[in-house]
Image 1 (tube, one colour):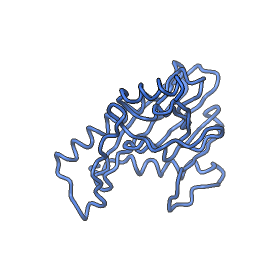
Image 2 (cartoon, helix red, strand yellow; image 1 turned 180 degrees about the vertical axis):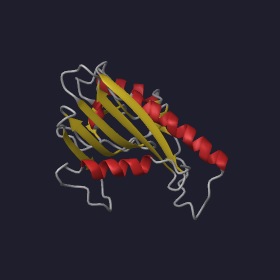
Image 3 (spheres, helix red, strand yellow; image 1 turned 90 degrees about the vertical axis):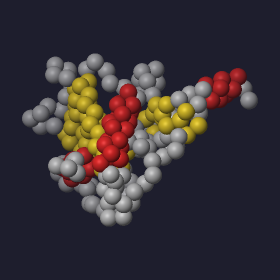
Image 4 (spheres, one colour; image 1 turned 60 degrees about the vertical axis):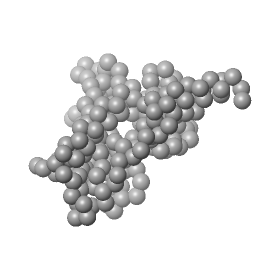
Length: 206
């Protein structure tokens, strides 16, 4: 094992946090497009199929390099009802996961970032949206809204708007297999994907 690999292994054995992470030192790569650094190997990878990078391993939260146990999955509300305390604790954890996920993203001073979390007791899933909007006065108007699985950090869907508000170029994309036809149309899937994100971010008690 060479010196660099040995150092990487030693750092991993003492590392606590998300396995997939990133910072401003990653060669200017915009982490909001699904390019992150695997803290175990030190290599950049992609969660969204971004060209030029190999696929990332599943996102895990580790303590001293060892993965922590995942939450028990509740398949459906009809099979097991969560107590009020369990739901409250899961929402609290989901909110914390949202803050931690947002910290891994590269948001410069020209970007206004909003992070929203939503725990679904019905599916026992934590959903997180990160919305980055260029601030007023920046030369290029740009908004990117991304939906993540809070537990795994997997990018599930995103919608993007570029250009002036009067005539923006918009698009949407859902990653993975879903039972809706979201592709195509004059808006390149923007409206359908945005609705898909909205449905997963709607509080069940509203």
